[in-house]
Length: 160
Image (cartoon, rainbow, N blue to C red; front, side, top):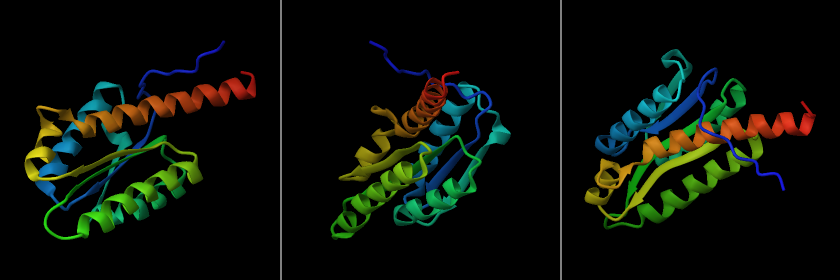
């Protein structure tokens, strides 16, 4: 049996971070976590592009444009949708996540989900560097691992 697994390696990789400005007090913390992770794993600061969009709804569009450039090893999507008192949550969170998943499959570039979907601000902050860690870090680490796995599988398939 062959197990295909890779470690998060950043050296030589170019990463796009697509970030929502809505709930910026949360997403700025997710961005800080993602950048810290990428830098710690060897991505050069000059190889990290941050693409800012108004809200979570716009994440898939910007991620598609980033994927279409063909220059990124992976794309990290960061955002925060808090349920609140209106049905806004239902119309934004699911479609944004589905859109990002579709881009990952269509483009064959790793697109990771750092989109928080919480009931309230307290839960969001707990996941943006609080007691539940930083999901921006987690999404960036997953992106590096998937990029390395994609490289490994590609070389295995090619027989090199």
